[in-house]
Length: 348
Image (cartoon, rainbow, N blue to C red):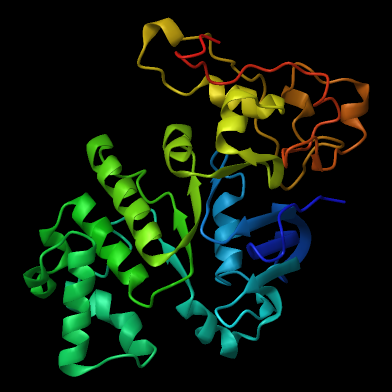
């Protein structure tokens, strides 16, 4: 059984044994012949006011978790216990579809592509004002004033509200997306690779803006990304996923400098280093990523793990605490000495 640390008073979202299996259907009658296990028995906590980074290779299930929390997908199994603004705890997985609207004022999402996420036929005014109209918060002059204030908050001029998305750069479009997400004063924001489509210099601007908004509005972030450099900069804790499962969860500094799972070690070896004195040999994993429709027995990572032993192929490891709220799904985490990101200050 997974250990879920943190005081209950600090936890804003607690995900327990979440599963999202997509059916594989074949034949004229569309019989279900199997399932793609996009998310397979994931448990994690998100504390109030923190940024939890969710990382892993493409297709590992991190975006699916975000969409399950938003209830864009109805989970196959599990619980998603959310503490709302009234202090009550509700299981988002069991909320009827016709009652989700009230929770979507507090839970918002920032999308990856700043181009496809904005309707090209709507003005900036229409895009940012839409949540306010849907939830009946403002109209008329008050609505226009609120949109102007939101644009100022994200670093855009209010007069831009009459323009269409094609008139803006990628970074400006993402600022519009941020303004739309912040329109309802949310408590929990799921950011799905919000800077991956932007230039590096623009990435830094958007990340700094997100941090400023977090302090100003007391936001909690789930930051989904495959870019470990970005995750290290913005996250308080990091959760690493592999083929639908969590393999390691820890504070950012501890995970980057003292990884305990072989998959995390391999990911960190690929982080670019600008100082040639700190460059180390990259760990190249053999084989292919496991098929989530037909995952291997035991530990899903064992066919690619150079530390694997006989037990790994038959016995699936639980995500357990090895001390200091450092969770690892590896039978031999206490015995391995793995390489983290080299620090120029420590020289190791």
